[in-house]
Amino acid sequence: MLSIRQQPFKYAVLALVWGWLLFLVLAPNLMVVGASVMTRDPSSFISLPLNLDAYRQLFDPLYLDVFLHSLYMAAVTTLICLLIGYPFAWALSKVGKQRQVLLIFFLIVPFWTNSLVRTYALKLILATNGLLNNALMSMGLIEEPLKLLYTEGAVIIGLVYLLLPFMILPLYSVFDDLKQELLMASHDLGGGHLATFRHVIVPLTLPGVIAGVMLVLLPAMGLFFVPDILGGSRNLLVGNVIKNQFLDARNWPFGAAASIVLTLTMAVLLLAHRVSKRRLGEEVA
Image 1 (cartoon, rainbow, N blue to C red):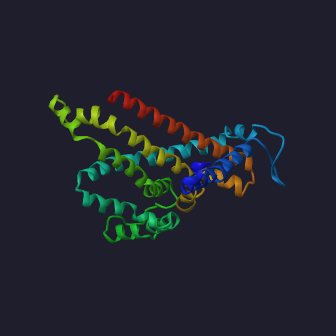
Image 2: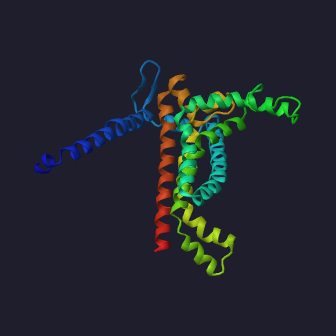
Image 3: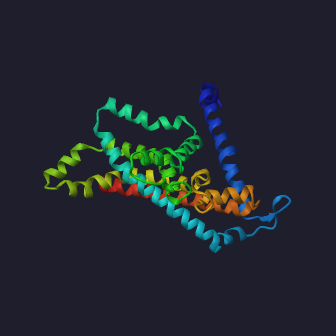
């Protein structure tokens, strides 16, 4: 009791943080878990008795195809972000500190604009009469506009555009902490550039890769407004299914069950990330 009087600000902050986590994080998630095992009710959305029908519905071929297609587009998005972000983060770690600050500033500037607004701007670029088609036609590279909008490719472009910084930043962090002495030791022991990259750089940057994958893969499956704006009805993500179940179909148990699956997927990726970091620490030790 005396310590609380001596440090009231510290305990007030702790109480605020724990209150935030309990009432705005834990409680809503428990409500979603509870809704996922209840029965759909047209009048009150959910009701008793408890059952697992919503989870069984996830294996319906119609929804399973949507989930697999969503996972495919999210995986392609993650791979593209990794292929672009890995060399970019490496190059960013090699420039001077002043240029690093400037480049990171340019990287995060788009976050100052709402992602929905940026997606609509991308729609103006990819439209049939958009900026990209008009530019290509004016240069004589194409004779008629390309169909870019309302395609799978447009959705992937939109996801990459929105999520690329989330891949670059954790990769930059691990590259910036990479000790040059280890690379020099590899070269001194006869390792070429390829061997050094494979046996030294990749293992040491693997935690950043896993962190980037976590920050891109799951959000890529949940950004429902990107397919709504750029992809049309044939290129749905899991986020679109969840949104439609809650707002249109009024099937709250199924929407909650789909949300729980996404959350569990994130938990599995987080566990894999921690295991990889622990194994890497044991190997370095």
